[in-house]
Image (cartoon, rainbow, N blue to C red):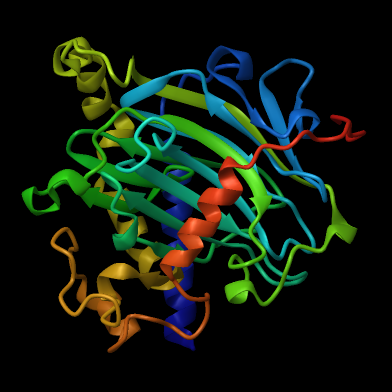
Length: 342
């Protein structure tokens, strides 16, 4: 017990130090500067100053927004606050994708926040797909060291030609380095940024055991401090993007959020040791040999023993991806709502 307490105290210290001393230098935009509504009509509520937005889920529809442009590599970020109380069956997603342009060979980078029954914490997962490789999902699932419904926290995705980093606040929680063996399964085509809230009752909480209870609706996820930093391109343009995006890509690859410091790497290691409860790299039921891009950490592997799966968190079946895709692309007209900004 003393050892566990000591480790958690060390993690908290590392998170505090990183959060206070290594804040990123970011330029935020208003909603209308970078985004447009995706679905949900009246369930997307802008703040009076246009710098933040709420997405609502009620019994009629969820809601979402999408970036106005597509980007060939970029840094995508927002401060997000999730719904509170009973949130079972809800999925709040912050992700990049190009499925609307490359339907059979799309790329995607995900933050997916999975609701829970009242009194139980939110959990979340990160994922990546390249060139339509949805049957080889690269999921990791985690707990959080804070309550994401109490206050805003920044969630960010860095995507360059060479690496992908998922951040919470200024803490890297996952890094994927491109290697030759990944081939076309490394995301490389222009993508849009999406944010959505929707009913994922069939899989999000305990494998679908607990559904969305609309007695607690409307459920609201809130977004502010919006960041789109990258090279906007036409996804089917004939001009080589290596030339048109060279300056932007150099900026991405040398920015402070592209370089993981020693302090940040220690914080990432502690986060993954204490809060990651699933990683496809250690899942021997799916992969008898870890995929080529996996970097096996002995301390991480020890936690997952032989199968790569801890006893909580639900399963990771491909039918969930198919169900999610249908839910994301469903567009319905929402009713007016009366949630006001404070």
